[in-house]
Image 1 (tube, rainbow, N blue to C red):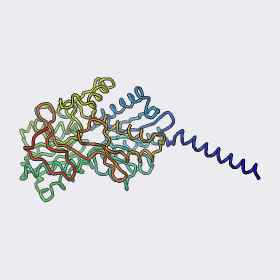
Image 2 (image 1 turned 90 degrees about the horizontal axis):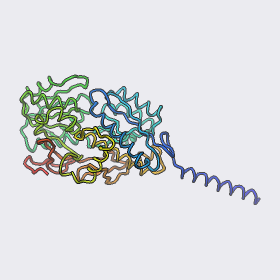
Image 3 (image 1 turned 60 degrees about the horizontal axis):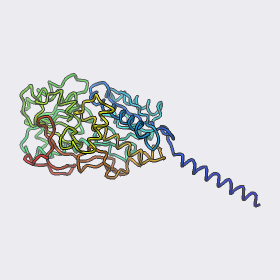
Length: 414
């Protein structure tokens, strides 16, 4: 009996040791190994939203820096695979399948656009592949019960539009409001936030014009909005069309309170092409630092960002806010992957993405931190109003969330 008992005990010990060794070597899903982490991305490098393509370029450069200067993440080199979808949802689906089934990435990170991400969301959730930190502020990304494999990043569009609504109600209570919005879920999310925020005074929206991304120009829409007699203009447009809006409003000698959605508040990709003189007085909202603002010139995160840009993207226009956004969101993903340690399964990636506590990736406005939980997939939830003056944005009022009271017009700038 003893030899049999001894053999059984020895076999049990070997199995235990083997399991322990396997665990120590790492737990992996497709796209991860002892030496590599494959990350997928989909960006509009061409088409009507191509101004956002610099986000993917920045992310690629950041992972190159991580590999060269830090040896990767937890000793694993990052392979970043990014494809163009031309801001076309059918192409987004094709590229998502290519990344998951062909390239076998661990996750898809920061793909851009509301309609493109909505198109790939069912597929990725069915395949149980993380759709992490999507580059869009639609409310649908914060639905962990319905879509447990999808997580947003930036403040959501309805919250932002609601902040604009409360600002109007407090400072121009008798306003006549005109709205330009993109004819998709992105534009409609803003419109809902605005109407909900205005409440009973939503009747003060006297004109609404939607545009399709296939239109070469939105000039006729601006003409119609001015003709409504509106004295407030809400511009819910991506960079190409936002720049056109600013130019056309100036050409028409129309002088409404001009409120521009945050996703097109970039000096480099929107206001410069539109003409800085034409952009004076525009109101928007921010959650990231304006790296050109002298207030931040000695801040460590701004100095780190400048050093990265100078080395890895020396030809970039630093006034384009997309470079700032890409740096912050990529650093957040790096933190998630660091927290994963040697458990690089897709389930653990989502678990750690939902376990960020007051994380500061850098370049967030003071007081804003990245926080998530298993029931809250909205990492950033605060914004601050700002007005364009001279060559840059001037912030005013407090940090605001969905339930905040709007600041007075006369409240001092920072």
